[in-house]
Image (cartoon, rainbow, N blue to C red):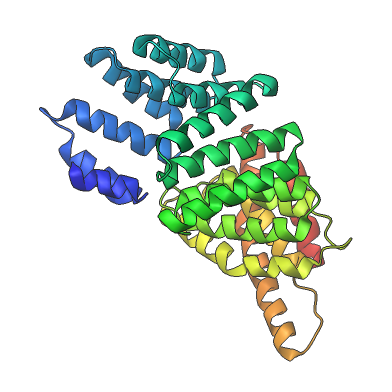
Length: 341
């Protein structure tokens, strides 16, 4: 169990999951259920986590940690009112509004876009944490991250950048640049830079975030798809930002493709739409120009784009044909990019 926790804290989810499956028998049932809940959350399987944690709650006396964990899962599932109910219950059980409760309820209000209530709660939670535990770099980084994200959504982009840079710095010095938490801070920093019109810095942060996510045990198409969407649809490529900057995604994309294949995540429409965006980034950065070395590199990226599109096309068509989603527009994009190649 201790070794599983070490793996969990280091986001080595495959190893952690394997240990918990071996341990999943009496008398360790409650501990294993809690551990599996944590793995599920970190692997973005919140619905599964909710079921496991509800089972823990049924088997144990009321505890603020369980209530807060349930609130966190339902907050991630976008069931904000249900999340608030659990967070309020945790505060009531303790008998006061602790800094954890300010943080949790602040996130609920942020997610409900009640920014006038969210920002003061998150600011107070951060101030209280700095007062009580100023050396807890990871928790402080998470709070700076939460507050920065709130500021960004409020339109206070420069304030957001300040908070998110602090979060990234704290993650870097405490748990390193390979941690998913560091990647998450880079992802939010990407959005704040782009929303604030600082596009070159936004691309730098986006590539850093993409690289971290691509190598995770908990790799998933959605965050990679969203990051590429920022680069391709929100950054003014060819109008102030040179598309050749996207060439720096070549190696991270290769890593993501290998990781997804290893985890059998490259077989459905989600993979298809992601691979189309990957290919588009390679196409845009692969105009045949420059010296021989530059032209050879561009040709390599075009070949990579072609392979991605050939893999994506049948997956996207199948999703449309089977009624899972109307991805006709993605099929048209694939056809257009193949012709461009």
